[in-house]
Amino acid sequence: MLHKGFVFLFLLAAVFISCQDATKLPKEAREPIPVTIARFDQDFFALDTGRLSEELDNLSARYPDFLPGYLQAILGIHPADPQAPEAIRAFINSYRPVYQQSLPITQKQFADLPEQLQTALQWMKYLVPAFKPDSPFVLTPFIGPMDAYESFSIGDYGDVRTTNGVGIALQFHLGRDAEIYDQGMKNGVFFQYQVQRFTPETMLVNAIKNIIEDQFPYTSAGKPMIEEMVEKGKRLYLLKRVLPETGDSLLLGYTGRQTNGCFENEETIWQFFVKNDLLYSIDPAVNQQYLRDGPKTPELGDASPGYIGLFTGWRIAESYMKKFPDTSIDALMKKPAMEVYQASNYRPG
Picture 1 (cartoon, helix red, strand yellow):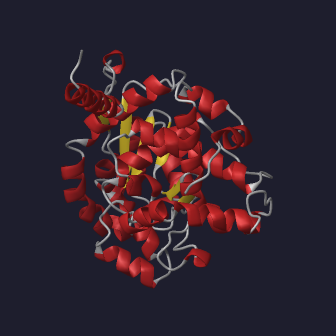
Picture 2: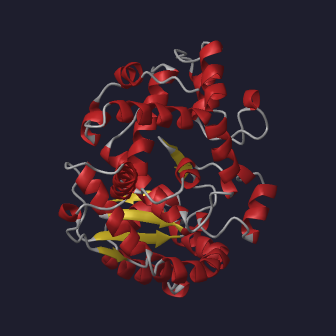
């Protein structure tokens, strides 16, 4: 007969191993995925603006897929426009200080980012068998305008998906204390709640968000709020599984204090939606108050984050997966949001 104390220790060990396994990549998923960095940022700002036409031809030969999209979609410059050379020249001169400020950031961050991203891609491939990562998977850093900041299904950012990897908008990763952001806030280009996410650490998070966005395209047109919440929550749940050792605040885009507050007041947040009959709202003007980026949720107090519905949707997805632990990520992502909500029996408190 086993001694009770031994049984207790055995159970503790089992729990510990289980917790460890949640963040440890299985052996069968460790097939190398090559990740490289194509320093478009360096090559672009090294252009000789005195002979720009020839220089752009050479740059195009090196980045045939990325350069056209960069000029048109990010800089808003059409190469065929007669004014294009002057506009490119003006951008280079104007943003060179931003590029210079990014150099120590990239020197430090790029030492580990390829390996970190490879592990994340291995997780993604393991969890979503249909995902076929580019090989090599290319990180393309660039400098874009300070207002090139867009809304996606689980966050707002300036990084982009490319034809062979992801593009990193370095102007949004200089560190929240960068002086250039002070000027941006004074000019109303962005706000403090956005700047707190402009860190080197969000490079990896945004890269995976882009991949999830590409793998599971999302549209919210005409959906009730609860379905929007759950669709976003499913994607955040996947993000957490792909980046198991990344802090919740980085994934959510909240501050650490806001994240802790959400966990501590989870029941209050849920009851706010229930008691105000918001779960089945299909009014975009109402829904975006809780499902879009913002400084706070006024009804929940100044210390609350904006985008509060992202947290609730994530917790619903987690509740569902705890109740049905054998569900694959593919099955979760394909399951209608309303069914996930109803089956989750989500009742915090």
